[in-house]
Length: 228
Image (cartoon, rainbow, N blue to C red; front, top):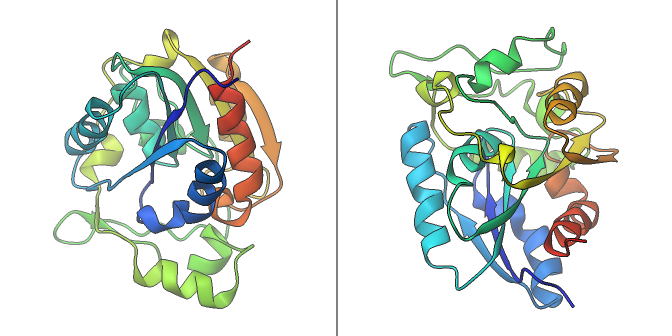
């Protein structure tokens, strides 16, 4: 019998909550109570508050899941008393004093990566010409086009703001490494998760492995909900 029935899902930059639909449907059918956070993408602080607001409404132990930049948010917000386990899905997992950018710079970017420089408002977008190959190569062209059209306005300051209290130091963490990732190369994911003793599962998929391989990602979330 599962111990933790509440699941909170957090999306990253260049995306919105709709990408979690497949994972949501799998978990919902298995009896989990699933909440999808609408990450405002305006700052680390705003994102953390949005996650905490969702956690406040949980009625008990919760598995907190983050994709990509969402991993930064769950690292800080995961200190919430309702959180029992963390799941990083092709996600950044910084330590205290580290930012997502610090880790992004630890390895050369893949040629397919299309993260653009901030515009005059400090907003970062993903290059339209590289979006499919760089972010979601294992989705159809139609699905990639929808994801591009629905990407949020991601303010760069969230990418450079350091973590102050890394929850993975005190909460059990699980990680999904997307082996075909061109946005956070697998080498970076491996280094972060090894340092934190994260329980790792490798899944063949693009950066949006939670969209393209929802069953595999849901399996890791279910594993996190059933601690030994």
